[in-house]
Image 1 (tube, one colour):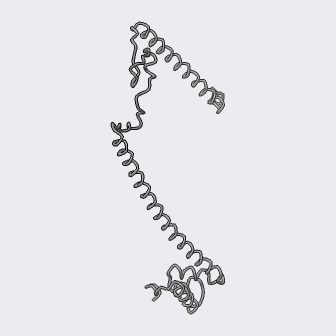
Image 2 (cartoon, one colour):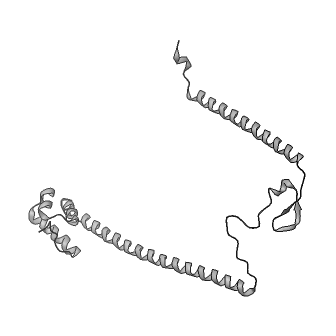
Image 3 (cartoon, helix red, strand yellow):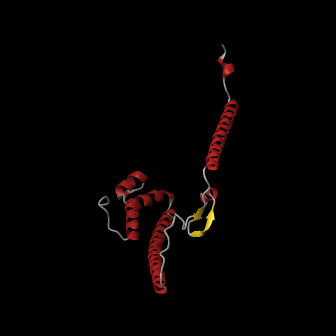
Length: 189
C-alpha cells in the first residue's frame, strides 16, 4: 500500500474546508426555516389581540409589529428628569451647567499640568542634547572618556579603560564636574 498517494495538499484541504462550510450553512438554513414555519403556525392559531405602542396609548398595532415597537426612552441612557415647573427646569439646567463648568476647569488644570511636564521634559532633552554635542566635538580618543565621566566613573577607571594618561582622565572628569556644577562622587575620591 502506497501512502504517498493518500497525501493531501493545501488545495485539497482548502476544498474540504469550503465543502464543510457549505454543508454547515445549508443545515443552519434548514433549521431556521423550520423554526420560522413553527412560529408562523403558532401565530396563525393564536387569536389576534391589538397591542398599544408604549408612550402612545391611542395607537394600536398588531402582534407582529409589537416586537419592533420602540421603548419610551433609549436603554443605554437614563431618562432625563422631568420638571413640572419652569423654575425646576431652570434649576436642572443650572446644575448641568455647573457640572459642565467644573469638568471644564478640571480639564484646564490637567492641561496646564501636562504643559508644565512637557516644558520640563523639553529642558531635560535640551540639556542631554547639549551634553551629546559637547562630547561629539571632543577628539575621538576622549569621546569615551567624556561619556564615562558623565556616567560618574572616576579618573583611574577612565584611564584604564580608555588607554589615556591618568592626568588626562582627571582633566576630563574635572571638565565634566565643572560643566555640571557638581561635587566629586565617592568613586572619584
